[in-house]
Image (cartoon, rainbow, N blue to C red; front, side, top):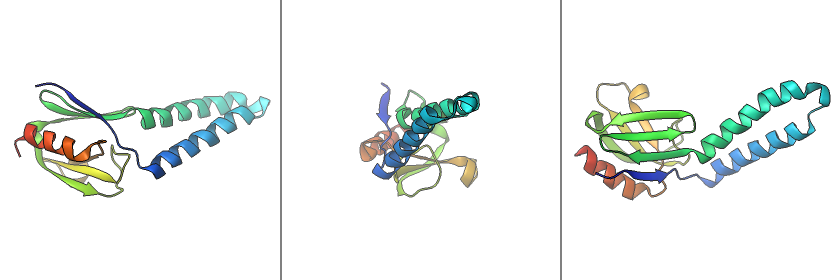
Amino acid sequence: MEVYHMRSKVDWWVGALLLFSLGIMGFTLVTVPENERLIGYGVGVPTFAFITWILLGTYYELREEILYCRCGPFVEKIRYENIASIKLANGLLSSMALSSKRIEIRQKGKGFITGTTYISPLKREAFYDELKKRCHL
């Protein structure tokens, strides 16, 4: 079975919020007073890199035996046989999704908080259909 890779959809307002944050951060880094640059750069540069990583590094892969989810530095690997249910969802709960149009994934043997993952692939319905096939749901 081949790997099915898809980037995350980014809602316009999420992208705007993250880009605005990056703009403010960049402006602050350029204008920080000389006597405060060490602290400013020490905090600002890693934060700038973290936000950029989230924005550009969120994607999902349907691999041989697992659903691989990456949201910047955060990774979750969900085995297909551990998936209890999947459904199309809308919402803003914190998750590995950058869009309100999501897929809700519930895992067997886990509670709601630790066992529920939301993802927002660019082509949600196509990804949902392929995931459903691999989970045998």
